[in-house]
Amino acid sequence: MKAPVFAFGTRSAQRTHAVVLLALAASVVGGGIAAAIVGGFRINLTPSEPLGLWRIVALDRPAARGDLVFICPPQTVAMVQARERGYLRSGTCPGGVAPLIKTVVAVAGQHVEIDADVTIDGRRIAFSELAERDGNGRPMTSYPGGVVPDENVFLHSPFRGSYDSRYFGPLPASGILGLAQPVLTYAP
Image (cartoon, rainbow, N blue to C red; front, side, top):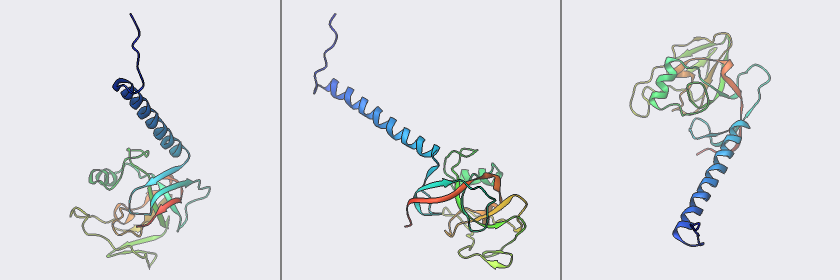
């Protein structure tokens, strides 16, 4: 029995080459994505912060006001509902969600008041107006306010439609992966 001969240019050879090239391309892309994640790079596709490539930079001190951070949200009722509503994307954090990129606007001991907007220790936070409904017309419930507990941070994004501590309250600082450093971003 003769082995089949594949002449370059035959349909069978073209299909074989196409499958091999597709598999190679998928391996390169998949490997690149895996290397980027392991190397601390993330792609932001949400409007809460500029779109594009970001890097997680180690934070070797406690989080402070003004830090822009990557943080994994805890698996709470509010976060499960946020995932169901589509506010959180899939990712590598517990619960299968992507880390959030938010600015720390209050730390443990600071007093947060929520009304039409957010005030921290009596100072209004710019661009902190609350939305009564989400983009699909569903009612939004805001955090009632109070003192940020020990080892927690209160997070904010200036984007009005951002899902942040205005709605879910303070998060444990232990979820902070590091500082968020823009690498190649675009703010539409």
